[in-house]
Image (tube, rainbow, N blue to C red; front, side, top):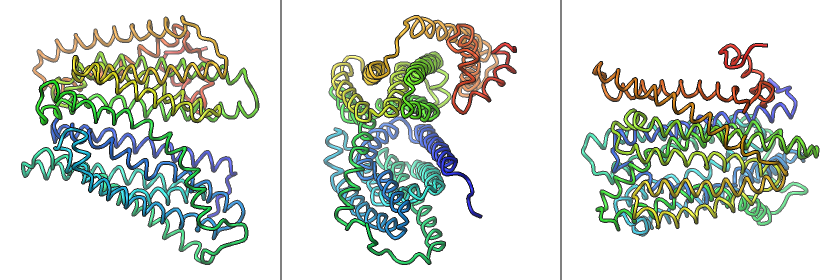
Length: 545
């Protein structure tokens, strides 16, 4: 059946599909770290978290930017009516990505001993080699995703993303259980976990190949790929793809660099403090217990920012400067408040969260510190998106690269004195630097003013009241449930779950009572305001008019 929707509605529908798939796949990828620690233990967890950022970095070098580049050139060819040219873009990019994936995978596999020495922990070598097996598979998958996106068909990308993450986690858990049953060493259990990336990459690639086969069957009458009038020869096309993809790649590399700083500094600094190689990796695993929580906050910030950016870009095109100023100021205020409240809530509930997810409370103090990296991480993500919406693409990447340097220096200074808590404190400062630089640039571009009462006073008051209510719940339930003799992990689940509900309710009440948000502002939220206000009225958080 032919799609009769308008181009703009198809574009919005496609964007929604991609955002939904990205949220789901990121959620699966984040939550998978919980069974990894539960089954493998902190030693395996530490090795995995030491290797995975490096794998992500190499993967981004091999793939980042290419889906966008392929998508753009395919869309241009299709708009010009050159179907053969669109296939030719895919053919040229596919060969390049296959070679790039094979080369990166071979280098990472062969250099595993050297990379393990750089990390200063030879226990990571099998996991590095295992992760390298995914690299020949993922780049070609990225190219196929870009082709279908250029055809304005987002469903193949969405399905392959979810399939990739689901199979990756399933393979990881199966291998963890099997290797643990056979009493394998931490090195090989971690290698089994990282092999999930290869299994997931194979699943995602298989999905894309099936979609490609079906697409070829539907379009078999369009003929073979030939050099049509107006097409570029191969080498200029390849050069154009690379020039378009490279800036996107450089921007994408800045985010995993902060995680990579921890990989190359924290275990080494812990060893210098007297820990053995195995003990250093156990403590690095404990340090990483709080990272999935921060990643969830960042994921939600990324997803919610999508609601604001289209409106901001449209206002810029229409030169509606006052609307841009108000929209930017409101978005910054909102995400500062959400980041602060979320971080404070995690910090208060750190002990029950730690026990609920990881069976003991060893990492609770570090989770408290790591929670507050979520404030800077959330703000840096959202303000980077705002700057990109205003046409400033390079500045956010430069700011994040600068914060990476700050993180490295502070790790060297703080970890020898404060251990893994020092690394968490360094993260708070580093992400705050990126966020502050972005906010200052936004303020200069849009000329929005800052009210310290609105920006600091009221958010801190609302957060303090929320935390006080959660603390009362925490203490009272600990006393009650201990007397009932409930299992410690189940007790922690009840306390943490109830704390989230109570904290969320108090936060919403404080939000509207202090007029940090009005009913009109809530109703004006893009896409969700018309549904949110009636719900809040039914909950009596907003008074019925």
